[in-house]
Amino acid sequence: MEQDNEQGRRQFLKCMAWAGAGTLWLMKSGVLQAQPLGDNDNGAAQGSAFSFVQISDSHIGFHRAPNPDVVGTLRRSLAMIRAQTSQPAFVLHTGDLTHLSKPEQFDTLAGLMQEARLGRSFYVPGEHDVIGDNGAEFFRRFGEKQHAGGWYSFDQGGVHFVGLINVLNLKAGGLGLLGADQLAWLKNDLAGLSAETPIVVFAHMPLWPLYPQWGWGTDDSAQAMTYLRRFGSVTVLNGHIHQIQQKVEGHITFYTARSTAYPQPAPGAAPAPGPLQSVKPDALHRYLGIRDVRHVHVGGALAVTDEVMA
Amino acid sequence: MSRSIVRAMWMALYCAVFACPAAGAAPAKDTSYAVGIQNFAFVPKTLTVPIGTRVVWTNRDEEPHVVTSAGATFPSSKALDSGDSYTVTFSKPGTYTYYCSIHPMMVGTIIVQ
Image 1 (cartoon, rainbow over the protein chains, first blue to last red):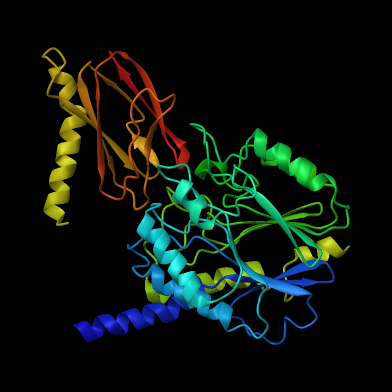
Image 2: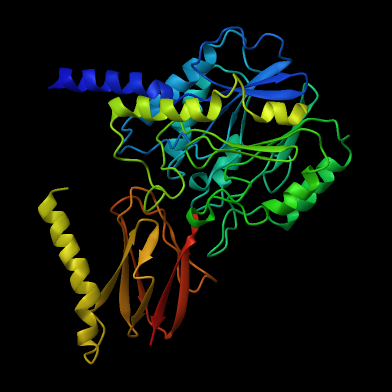
């Protein structure tokens, strides 16, 4: 029986290697290109100025179907990052590090990141990371501490990165929220930059009305986009929905990331956006593999790449 | 959790929701009403109860939820994991709107009269 369990766990982890993969972002000639981790790493990183990896929605503390081992799948994801031929400049975690904001869950996440020795990491909280204390524990451990509200920006290789918080002070009946203070800061933060500066914005909840019926959007994201529209290349990275979705709006491209923990249904494909429990470990690989092909393997890079260069 | 226990819990929920209003004429002190949290929604969405009623929310989703008063008119719950319950006794008449602080599109109302 124990042997069966061990075998099942191994099979599960093998399958989840796909589900748990992050996304490798390559900066080439000022244009970001996405590549799912675990793909043939055939020198894709060559010619890129730098790369970084986005991981998301680790949900440490979740222990039900379809993934009883979210620690194992995160560890596998981090190992895949380490296995890259060209080391990413840093790792972005776009939120829901934990399932219930518990200190021991934050401990586990921090331990796994440290154990992976990936160098610099940047975080923004998901709604699961701010339960009960408005994110105090999250910000104490993972915050950049640039501003009281938790948002921040930094530059890497000529690219301006902006980390936004859209999971606090949520209103009854509403979606994600940036708030007036953060929007004012964003406007000011971007004001001095030339329109040629590539911008990467990241936050947990989608910064576009992806599927508001399930809360997949941010109430005041349109205001933020008015500040970003003048730039020639804007990439918006989110987590939250545990699947890859993308959208292009002028020079602004939006992507959501897969989870390292478990998949959620496509918009409207289930009564509610809870974990896709029906996915068996041996079917998960196929299911997610298909989504990969549809959304990512378009001409070897995301369609958005052509859009921005045009 | 065994199926029989789950069935018993559902029976209890059913009784709490549908049987109690019949006892409306009696003193409401020991009555409790149940609100299920399932498929990212409060069920029933609006619940009318007599003064002094205990309202018990139980999370039947695989996702955690938080019962949060809009306007802080009653104490908010901690994160309710799957199967967790939260109880509030409403001792003053009024309309109490609440939502899930992490899935704010989930909104419910308790009317106490």
